Image (cartoon, rainbow, N blue to C red; front, side):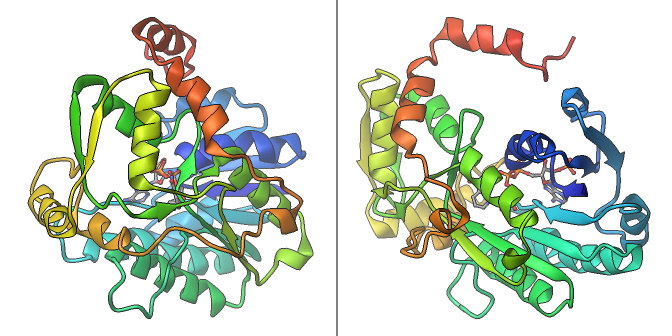
Length: 316
Ligand SMILES: NC(=O)c1ccc[n+]([C@@H]2O[C@H](COP(=O)([O-])OP(=O)(O)OC[C@H]3O[C@@H](n4cnc5c(N)ncnc54)[C@H](OP(=O)(O)O)[C@@H]3O)[C@@H](O)[C@H]2O)c1
């Protein structure tokens, strides 16, 4: 199949491309900036196409000759706090993609949503509500859709464990918001395999698949695990709920938003599921501890320099 990936230049997309090409598919990464992700050209069977994801006409041209499309666009934070940024990236973009897919004759669409996405929950964060709205659009679209809903995704190039690792490298003490939030980290390789399997299977059409790992933990346990895997003695202190909330409100105004009131709201709902679809898709889910312990344990200054030297993203 010719499979287009919108948002395919990111963490999940980069790990999904080898899983799809290994099955003989030809992949087209639709990106706003092909120069920024030119390293993906090195993956055999992958082509880059520039497209404006908010312009259905432009997107339709880019989808010419495509059999299936995977939507991987997602943001965890927006500029401002109104929810408009989330609506644009999740809902408006999905609307534009549905129109473009119909125009280009693409019948199959797979959406990478998030666990707990829900358009009907008034208490949900903008992130989870708009992910839910995008799911609703797909269910009503008449296209052959599949939705996957992962918990937090881990891997050597993730932005969860690695972000905490960067913080823990420099601070002796880390005050942590929402320490009790529960998660079931799922390996990016398993998410990639689930997407590839679903695209090859007719029985996946019309299905929504929660994807979680085999090991559940609180955010506090995961951050303490990160410090111990790095071999660092760090004091990680869970903040009480009112202070966590206040931290979100204050950090809304910090450039780059290391945490936000919307992240705080997302963390009020446990990121766990008893209905893991991975075994149903023939995948034995991998726990985070083995892989991430050896990755984080190797995060010495020298090994980071070596990794940079090996990286295809290296700028010459
Ligand atoms: N990572 C996780 O732990 C996790 C957990 C649950 C669900 N998910 C969902 O899985 C999907 C993939 O996650 P990821 O971690 O791979 O994402 P990512 O690396 O942060 O971003 C994916 C791509 O989306 C495009 N993009 C980013 N912001 C955009 C915007 N405002 N408008 C249009 N395009 C934009 C970018 O592609 P270009 O710049 O090339 O256009 C980017 O490379 C997302 O939908 C995310 O919500 C992720």
